[in-house]
Image (cartoon, rainbow, N blue to C red; front, side):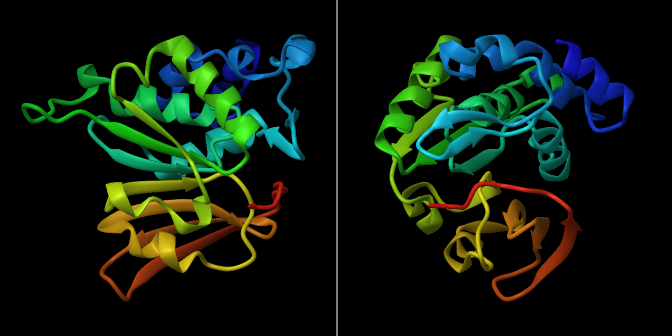
Length: 212
Protein backbone atom coordinates (compact mmCIF):
# COMPACT_ATOMS: atom_id res chain seq x y z
CA UNK A 1 0.00 0.00 0.00
CA UNK A 2 1.33 3.41 -0.98
CA UNK A 3 0.60 5.09 2.35
CA UNK A 4 2.50 2.35 4.21
CA UNK A 5 5.65 2.99 2.15
CA UNK A 6 5.27 6.72 2.80
CA UNK A 7 4.83 6.21 6.56
CA UNK A 8 7.99 4.10 6.66
CA UNK A 9 10.02 6.60 4.62
CA UNK A 10 8.83 9.50 6.78
CA UNK A 11 9.70 7.66 9.99
CA UNK A 12 6.19 7.22 11.39
CA UNK A 13 6.38 3.43 11.09
CA UNK A 14 9.55 1.92 12.57
CA UNK A 15 8.86 -1.41 14.26
CA UNK A 16 9.02 -4.49 11.98
CA UNK A 17 5.99 -6.22 13.52
CA UNK A 18 3.84 -3.09 13.17
CA UNK A 19 5.04 -2.43 9.61
CA UNK A 20 4.17 -6.01 8.69
CA UNK A 21 0.69 -5.59 10.19
CA UNK A 22 0.10 -2.47 8.07
CA UNK A 23 1.19 -4.38 4.96
CA UNK A 24 -0.94 -7.46 5.64
CA UNK A 25 -4.14 -5.86 7.01
CA UNK A 26 -5.70 -3.97 4.11
CA UNK A 27 -7.42 -0.72 5.07
CA UNK A 28 -9.81 -1.12 2.12
CA UNK A 29 -11.39 -4.08 3.96
CA UNK A 30 -12.55 -1.72 6.74
CA UNK A 31 -14.22 1.18 4.91
CA UNK A 32 -17.77 1.39 3.51
CA UNK A 33 -18.00 0.14 -0.07
CA UNK A 34 -19.01 3.55 -1.47
CA UNK A 35 -15.68 5.09 -0.38
CA UNK A 36 -13.50 2.03 -0.93
CA UNK A 37 -11.48 3.89 -3.57
CA UNK A 38 -10.32 6.37 -0.89
CA UNK A 39 -8.81 3.75 1.42
CA UNK A 40 -5.27 4.45 0.19
CA UNK A 41 -5.46 8.11 1.23
CA UNK A 42 -3.60 9.13 4.36
CA UNK A 43 -6.64 10.77 5.93
CA UNK A 44 -9.55 9.94 8.22
CA UNK A 45 -12.66 8.66 6.44
CA UNK A 46 -16.31 8.58 7.58
CA UNK A 47 -17.81 5.22 8.56
CA UNK A 48 -21.22 6.53 9.64
CA UNK A 49 -22.87 7.52 12.94
CA UNK A 50 -20.50 10.47 13.37
CA UNK A 51 -17.44 8.20 13.54
CA UNK A 52 -14.37 7.76 11.34
CA UNK A 53 -11.66 5.29 10.45
CA UNK A 54 -8.59 7.13 11.69
CA UNK A 55 -5.87 8.63 9.52
CA UNK A 56 -3.12 6.04 8.90
CA UNK A 57 -0.43 8.42 10.16
CA UNK A 58 -2.26 8.82 13.47
CA UNK A 59 -2.78 5.07 13.87
CA UNK A 60 0.89 4.44 13.09
CA UNK A 61 1.96 7.01 15.69
CA UNK A 62 -0.30 5.52 18.37
CA UNK A 63 0.75 1.92 17.70
CA UNK A 64 4.43 2.85 17.79
CA UNK A 65 3.82 4.37 21.24
CA UNK A 66 1.86 1.33 22.39
CA UNK A 67 4.29 -1.25 20.92
CA UNK A 68 1.95 -4.29 20.71
CA UNK A 69 3.94 -7.51 20.97
CA UNK A 70 3.27 -11.23 20.51
CA UNK A 71 1.41 -12.62 23.52
CA UNK A 72 0.00 -9.27 24.72
CA UNK A 73 -3.57 -8.94 25.95
CA UNK A 74 -4.84 -5.59 24.64
CA UNK A 75 -8.09 -3.68 25.15
CA UNK A 76 -9.14 -1.69 22.06
CA UNK A 77 -11.69 0.97 23.03
CA UNK A 78 -13.84 2.44 20.26
CA UNK A 79 -13.19 -0.33 17.76
CA UNK A 80 -15.30 1.30 15.03
CA UNK A 81 -14.53 -0.19 11.62
CA UNK A 82 -12.27 -2.86 13.15
CA UNK A 83 -9.11 -1.77 11.32
CA UNK A 84 -7.09 -0.91 14.41
CA UNK A 85 -8.32 -4.06 16.14
CA UNK A 86 -7.10 -6.15 13.20
CA UNK A 87 -3.69 -4.44 13.23
CA UNK A 88 -3.36 -5.17 16.96
CA UNK A 89 -4.53 -8.76 16.49
CA UNK A 90 -1.92 -9.34 13.81
CA UNK A 91 0.80 -7.99 16.11
CA UNK A 92 -0.15 -10.03 19.18
CA UNK A 93 -0.39 -13.37 17.36
CA UNK A 94 2.85 -13.27 15.36
CA UNK A 95 4.80 -16.00 17.14
CA UNK A 96 7.68 -15.76 14.68
CA UNK A 97 8.79 -12.50 16.29
CA UNK A 98 9.15 -13.86 19.81
CA UNK A 99 9.07 -17.21 21.57
CA UNK A 100 5.83 -17.47 23.57
CA UNK A 101 5.24 -19.69 26.59
CA UNK A 102 3.30 -22.88 25.84
CA UNK A 103 -0.43 -22.27 25.76
CA UNK A 104 -0.15 -18.48 25.64
CA UNK A 105 -1.73 -16.63 22.73
CA UNK A 106 -2.09 -12.91 22.34
CA UNK A 107 -5.61 -11.52 22.56
CA UNK A 108 -7.41 -8.31 21.67
CA UNK A 109 -10.66 -7.36 23.39
CA UNK A 110 -12.41 -4.85 21.13
CA UNK A 111 -15.32 -2.82 22.47
CA UNK A 112 -17.73 -0.62 20.49
CA UNK A 113 -20.82 1.17 21.79
CA UNK A 114 -22.70 1.83 18.50
CA UNK A 115 -24.61 -1.37 17.56
CA UNK A 116 -24.37 -0.80 13.80
CA UNK A 117 -20.61 -0.16 13.98
CA UNK A 118 -20.19 -3.18 16.23
CA UNK A 119 -21.74 -5.35 13.49
CA UNK A 120 -19.76 -3.59 10.75
CA UNK A 121 -16.44 -3.94 12.57
CA UNK A 122 -16.99 -7.55 13.59
CA UNK A 123 -17.84 -8.49 10.00
CA UNK A 124 -14.68 -6.76 8.77
CA UNK A 125 -12.49 -8.46 11.38
CA UNK A 126 -13.78 -11.87 10.34
CA UNK A 127 -12.32 -11.36 6.86
CA UNK A 128 -9.07 -12.30 8.63
CA UNK A 129 -10.53 -15.00 10.91
CA UNK A 130 -9.39 -13.33 14.14
CA UNK A 131 -12.67 -13.86 16.03
CA UNK A 132 -13.02 -17.46 14.87
CA UNK A 133 -9.44 -18.21 15.97
CA UNK A 134 -10.01 -16.71 19.42
CA UNK A 135 -7.52 -13.87 18.93
CA UNK A 136 -10.22 -11.16 19.04
CA UNK A 137 -13.20 -10.94 21.37
CA UNK A 138 -15.65 -8.37 20.04
CA UNK A 139 -17.86 -6.70 22.66
CA UNK A 140 -20.87 -4.38 22.34
CA UNK A 141 -20.65 -1.95 25.24
CA UNK A 142 -19.43 1.30 26.78
CA UNK A 143 -15.69 1.41 26.24
CA UNK A 144 -15.17 4.24 28.73
CA UNK A 145 -15.84 1.64 31.43
CA UNK A 146 -13.40 -0.82 29.88
CA UNK A 147 -14.12 -4.55 30.07
CA UNK A 148 -13.34 -5.71 33.57
CA UNK A 149 -14.08 -9.37 32.86
CA UNK A 150 -10.82 -9.76 30.88
CA UNK A 151 -8.69 -7.35 32.90
CA UNK A 152 -5.91 -6.68 33.68
CA UNK A 153 -4.50 -5.77 30.27
CA UNK A 154 -0.92 -5.46 29.12
CA UNK A 155 -1.90 -2.54 26.95
CA UNK A 156 -4.94 -0.36 26.23
CA UNK A 157 -5.62 1.68 23.08
CA UNK A 158 -8.39 4.27 22.88
CA UNK A 159 -9.24 5.63 19.43
CA UNK A 160 -11.64 8.47 20.36
CA UNK A 161 -11.05 11.58 22.42
CA UNK A 162 -11.87 11.71 26.13
CA UNK A 163 -12.28 14.93 28.10
CA UNK A 164 -10.26 13.71 31.07
CA UNK A 165 -8.13 10.80 32.23
CA UNK A 166 -10.22 7.58 32.18
CA UNK A 167 -9.87 6.34 35.75
CA UNK A 168 -11.62 3.03 35.15
CA UNK A 169 -9.32 2.16 32.26
CA UNK A 170 -6.27 3.03 34.37
CA UNK A 171 -7.45 0.50 36.97
CA UNK A 172 -7.72 -2.25 34.34
CA UNK A 173 -4.11 -1.86 33.18
CA UNK A 174 -1.39 -4.15 34.54
CA UNK A 175 1.54 -2.73 36.47
CA UNK A 176 4.16 -1.99 33.83
CA UNK A 177 1.46 -1.75 31.17
CA UNK A 178 0.94 1.02 28.62
CA UNK A 179 -2.14 2.98 27.59
CA UNK A 180 -2.30 5.28 24.57
CA UNK A 181 -5.31 7.55 24.17
CA UNK A 182 -6.43 10.97 22.96
CA UNK A 183 -7.48 13.53 25.57
CA UNK A 184 -8.96 16.54 23.81
CA UNK A 185 -6.46 17.39 21.02
CA UNK A 186 -3.44 15.52 22.35
CA UNK A 187 -2.31 11.90 22.29
CA UNK A 188 -1.14 10.71 25.70
CA UNK A 189 1.08 7.81 26.70
CA UNK A 190 0.50 6.40 30.18
CA UNK A 191 2.89 3.83 31.69
CA UNK A 192 1.60 2.27 34.91
CA UNK A 193 4.24 2.02 37.63
CA UNK A 194 1.86 0.77 40.33
CA UNK A 195 -1.78 1.26 41.41
CA UNK A 196 -1.25 4.94 42.20
CA UNK A 197 1.56 6.13 39.97
CA UNK A 198 1.80 6.63 36.21
CA UNK A 199 4.42 8.06 33.91
CA UNK A 200 2.68 10.38 31.44
CA UNK A 201 3.75 12.02 28.22
CA UNK A 202 1.70 14.35 26.01
CA UNK A 203 1.90 14.67 22.21
CA UNK A 204 -0.27 17.65 21.12
CA UNK A 205 -1.67 18.58 17.73
CA UNK A 206 -4.14 15.81 16.80
CA UNK A 207 -7.87 15.76 16.06
CA UNK A 208 -10.24 12.93 17.03
CA UNK A 209 -13.96 12.24 17.16
CA UNK A 210 -15.27 12.28 20.76
CA UNK A 211 -15.48 9.13 22.86
CA UNK A 212 -19.17 8.18 23.15
